[in-house]
Each structure stands twice: as C-alpha cells, then as structure tokens.
Length: 129
Image (cartoon, rainbow, N blue to C red; front, side, top):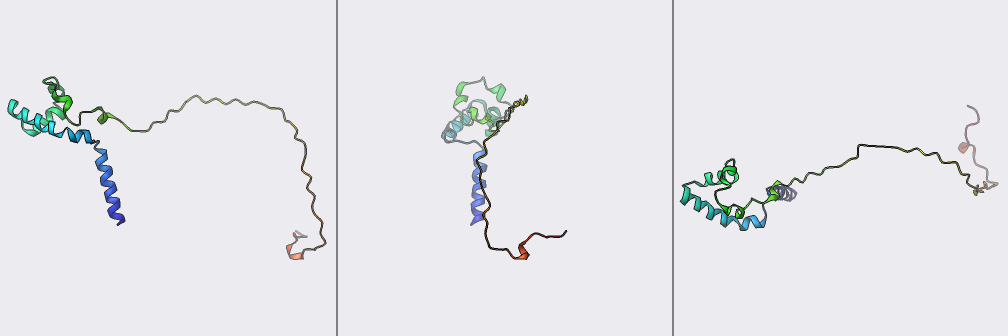
C-alpha cells in the first residue's frame, strides 16, 4: 500500500511539473481547430503545426495571424521560476560598545542546613590522593 501511495504521489508531482492548468485543458479544442485551419490553408501536418506554434519556428510564424493568444500553453506562467533566492547583505558591521559594569545588589542568602545525620564513608570524597 505504501508503494502505491508513493507511486501516486510521484505521478502527481510529475503531472504538476508540466504546468498544465484547467484553462489550458479547456482551450484544447481551439488548438485542434487551429490545427485543422493550418492543414486546410497551408497543408501542414500536426507535427509541423506544433513546431510552428510551440517549437523553433514560433518566432517567424507569430505574426501571421492573431489566433495565437487563444491557444493553450501560451500563458506567461510557463516562464515562471519558483526558485527560492536569498538576499544577503554583504556588508557586515559590528559595533562593540563598552558598558560600565553596574553592581547588582547581593540578594542571595542561602545557608547550608546542618544536620546530625552523618554520611557513611563510602559517599565521602577521597581523603588521600
């Protein structure tokens, strides 16, 4: 059962790393319609269409028509970087201030209680070193 749970968690993390949201899934129909348009107008296959809109040829093809904003996976959240960075001030300065010693009044008056109970010699500190 633990292996199944670990596998399902790792699969969930894998799917989340693709940054696919519900909005992108709802725009998938627009992607297919636009692919059909390219097939009819330019004779592109589906893989050529993907290369033109998501691959290396995207820069040249971006200005041809305006339907590209409606395609899925075109949001700016794909460019987000969730790396935690720490900003550290490199200037470190220490100020050593000398404060005068203030004497604290002695308010501890503990006295050792005296008892007639004598401890056996085994619990006494050594007498000769």
